[in-house]
Every structure is written in structure tokens, then in C-alpha cells.
Image (cartoon, rainbow, N blue to C red; front, top):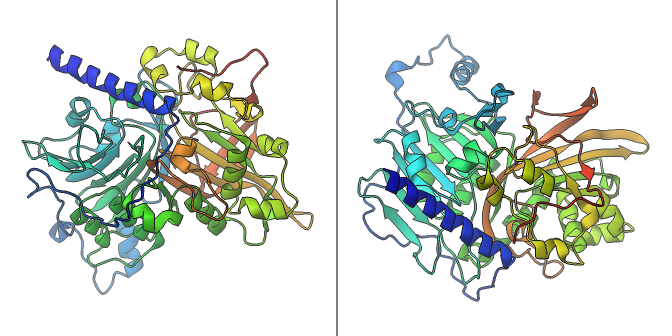
Length: 506
């Protein structure tokens, strides 16, 4: 048993080392000339029983049936009343020894509900099966989409000897540093599907020693094929992007998405076949589409130029003022060309409006959870030393749980816009959470005006619209859908002092 754990630890260390090497090189994607648009997966090994059933199993015998004296509204209310999270909630991961804010924190076991779970789809960058599998009953079928090294493994679908686990290696094109970084769960129960978007990998450190963030919403089944929705269609496309078996995707046809208010934002490597024909659907392009769709229609671009972005990720990329400008434009639902037409924003304006959060060296040294969490916080010295790095945008954050490190990936857009001198969107905006770090590799970078951004990674996240910001007792509170959002950090970010350094590696 000890040797098994040692092997698992070595495997995790190897994955972290590989990640270090990718970050060191900037994870710059090498473009592919291939024009393949094939969605099919190369099936390798035994795959007869890998898929979930093509329609959900609904036990109507043990559920009350609609009758003439029960309106459809009553039936819907009854069905929703049995769901733990019918409208969606944000939660933080519960770290070892944490005693405060327990109502806002969850463990993986809390999310999975092992005794009730029938089947599950999971995706991750780092995977530790020895840690993960005890969270599930041995009879529960799992489909896991993971990252892999294409120099060692091939794209395909692989099944474990027991038949419990099916591993999916998605498509990678001809690129230098392929990364499947998405963190998504679909958990299938008798009466509903639990949708989970997260910043946590499927290994111990992310769920016990680092602060991560999750969005959870429970979606009831429908007895017939459900009506099409933007969210449902986008989710189905997102699953196909990462080579999820079609039988799993077809499950979504029987899920009720009518109460979903969030929007999905994904990234797919530009070298991947699907990106060749859907490039406008990913990264900064997708963020811009969502931001424009959810912003106040009475406000034009110029009236949003006071919007402040709070951007945090556990890995820092090769940032420049130009990249911040492009990101800011996308976050407003605009374009750099429109901002320039309106008189433009100076680099100083951009670096004031785009706050990039990262832990300081002192915070890393005070971390009480040992050296392993620090290995998961990545900021290369060469990136920070680059003369083009926008240091004025860099801010230190204060973890919600003292002396711990944050692995969550969060963006908050906070607007105080006015219309004809009247405040129209004061202290309102949106929130992103998911797998995207604040890096060009995750969100993409613009190579030429008017062209789709160039993306390196697979990523998955969600945008919560109509988020409200309020200052109370000297602290900022963020609410969505009438509920307070627990953040992994205090929102009072401050600039680095002259003698302070970020937590660097390499």
C-alpha cells in the first residue's frame, strides 16, 4: 500500500514537473496546417460498455404523477423542491483544518453524493485515480477526460480492466505544448443531473490544501426531449470539443435547462480540428460575445470605460500592456478598434482598470499547508523580469482563509457606468469562474486585427451575469441571483509595495 502511494506521489510530481516545463516555455501554440474537422474519437481497447445510457432512467413509479387537478406549475415546483441547488450556487473548496465559513465550503464527497450517484463525467488536467476512486462506489461508471502527453500516449478512449473507468484523451493538433485544462463535472442521479464547473483538479492538493472555487446547479430530467436552449447547445458543443462519447452528449436531450442563467465560456486549441471551423466560439472571442449579450443595452462602449476588472489565476502568463488592452476590450463586449475609435485608453488607464492579482513571496512563505501548494502557484521569473510585463497592473491579494494559497481562477467585472449623467449600472457587472488562468495560453492572444484569437489550451468556465457589488462595514460584498457569492479572497486589492515581490518560481 505504501508503495502504491509512493507511485501515486511520483506520478503527481511528474505531472507538476511537466507543467513547470510548459509554463517555462510560455505554452506558445505551434499552428497546424491540417484541415481536419473530424469529431470522432479513435477508439482503442475495449469500448463496448463505456457510454452512459442514451436517455435517463426515471423511476416514475415512485414519483407522484401529474393529474387533472395538479397544474404544470405545481408539478414543476414539486420537482424543483427536491433539488439541493435548483438555481445554482457558488462554493469554495473546504481545506484541511478549516473551521470557519463551513456553509460556504464543500468537499468533493459533498458534491459527488456517492450513495445516490449513478454515473459521472469528469474532466481534469492533473488526475490521481488512487485518490479519486474512493469518492465513488465501485459500481459507478466514470468517464474521465484528461490531459496527456501525445509523445507518449495517443488520442483515444481507454477502459480500465474493471470496466468502471473510461479515460478519454482528446484531440491535440500539431502544437508545442498541448494542455487539456478543463475542469467540468456532470453527475447523473435518478431524478437530476448535477452540473459543476470548477478550478480544482482531481487530486488531493486542490481539494484539501489550496482554495478553489466551484459552481453547482442541479438540473431535472424531462420525460421527453427538452426544448433547445443556448446553454444546453453550448454545453453539448463543449463536450464534443473534448471528445466526450456522443452517447454521453445525448443525455443532455432529456435535461431541463430552463432555469439556467449562466453562460459557458470555453477555449479549444487553435491547432485542434474543431477550432478550425469554430474559432470564433472560443477564448477571448467567446468572452466578448457573452459580455456584449449580458451588458446593459442602454450603455454604449464609451460609457463602460470605467469598468474595473479583478483578474486572478494561479498561473501567470506572458502579459503585456497590449494583451491587457485586448482582454479589457473583450470583457466589455467590445473590440480594441472600437476603443481606439472612441479616443482610446492609455496604457496607464488600462493598467488602472485591469487589476491582476497574485500572491506575494511573503504570502508563499507564510503558507501553513506546506510546500506542495506552493508548487501549484506558477509565475516564472523571466515573465516578471520582461520589460513589457505590466507591473503597474499587479496587485496582491489577501486569501479569505489566512495564510493559505488560492488556486481559484476568477474574474470580476465591476462597472460604475453612467448614462447622461444618471447612474445606470452602478456597482454591477459579471463574474467568471472556471479553469482559465489569466494567461494568453488559456484565453488566446490576438495575432492580427479582425482575426480569431490564437488559443493553446482546452479550458472551461462559466460567466454569472448581473452580479451586484456593495460595500458594507468597510468590506465589499458580491451577490448573484439574490445570494451572496463566497470569494476566495478579499476584494480590497492593493498594489505591490516597492520592496514586495510576487511568488516566483523558476
